[in-house]
Image 1: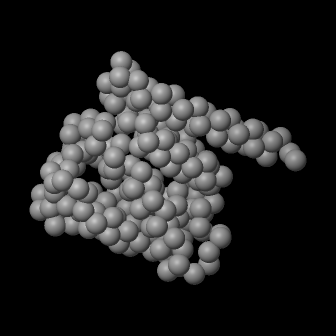
Image 2: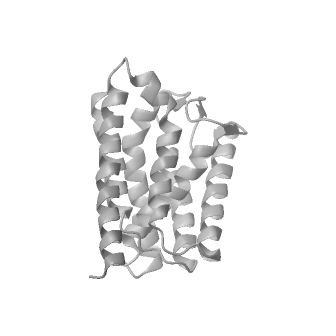
Length: 216
């Protein structure tokens, strides 16, 4: 193992530990009532930091990658904007100001989140599943699984609010369909998709929201 490979390996291990610690601290910070307002305030910065660390280990910033980034961001944002203003896609809901700057009622962090989740789940199945349709469906399914954990937490922490008694099934169906479309584009565009942090970041997110869903 040459020095460059060793240092890259060492950096990735440090990053994995740091991301795990970051989510553990966030878990306790959002659970305790006294610290919750502060941790709600820094949630957008947490998302930006995790995305930044992930992209530090990305290997191929070419046209295909930036095409995917823009497509996932804008498709996610436009879908959410339509959803917020019509109630037709996901259900009747609205975003608070907790997640930061909004465009047409939707926080910009939501667009980034669509990019991040497809990047993570698509990367997990990139080499594991060769068939694009099956891989896209698997990635979209993982995203819906995360959303099942996320919804209760998001309402409890005032990220967004539902204006109906129960979360409609249409929310999860639309999540799957939009995610599936973006996953297909992710598969078709040509750029290096192997990122050694994909699995650990997604596992941290899933565990983070699953635990919060049980204790909040």
